[in-house]
Image (cartoon, rainbow, N blue to C red; front, side, top):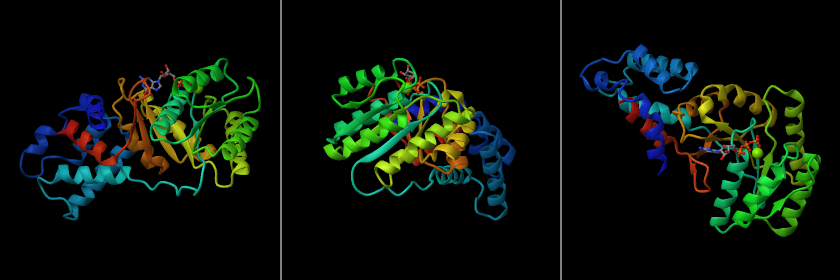
Length: 297
Ligand SMILES: Nc1nc2c(ncn2[C@@H]2O[C@H](COP(=O)(O)OP(=O)(O)OP(=O)(O)O)[C@@H](O)[C@H]2O)c(=O)[nH]1
Ligand SMILES: [Mg+2]
């Protein structure tokens, strides 16, 4: 299934909220109706209100004409989702630090990313910086064995910063293209653990100026707009530069991507749609906008 099909399935539950009203001629969609429909798609209160307000404003200023509501909305959604990404540090290796709350799908996403890199003929390395949870190292090692990707690990309980430092030195020495660092799950409310993440990030930069290239926040889409609270905290402490939204194959509608993009101002890069290695799709704002509009129409 491609991204459009997956999104369609999730957003399908929202179907036909605006359809009747949008197909009639003249002004039939009120900003209020639009807001309700967006809320039902899980975009969060703030985004729903903002879009409804700009709709009202666009109507007043003649930027949208009767019958042109859907086209306007589609462009608006795409604009909201199109936020600038960071500038990649030149040279190798490309370092991705994977962060998020417990069980969001970090380790699986790290493995999927390593798998993609390998499939593209790039030399990948997985780093087991989750030294906290029992069996976390073994979990990553078993993914590594399946993928044929080396896994750098130390004993459980080791300092994650030390693991990362050694791994980046090794990656440099071996000419690795992509280093993907799996970290321990942590609640965004635990300050000491958030501080540890900040430290790991600094260690990356010390080992390799400019690293990490990406701090990827893994969010479980089924937690809906609760993901927003996590995103805010990780954004503030871990310097998140991109988001991977997992478990979109479940009951999640996916509207939360809009809220995250707007609140954090960081792009959604990946969408997880299953437990398998191939179940990670690059996110595309235009495809999401199309799927959302289809669901609402
Ligand atoms: N359906 C589905 N399941 C997923 C997806 N991504 C991860 N999972 C599952 O979610 C569960 C947790 O995944 P992990 O990758 O271990 O999560 P984690 O964030 O590393 O967990 P901790 O290290 O304990 O914090 C596993 O059963 C995964 O198979 C996804 O996109 N879709
Ligand atoms: Mg994990």
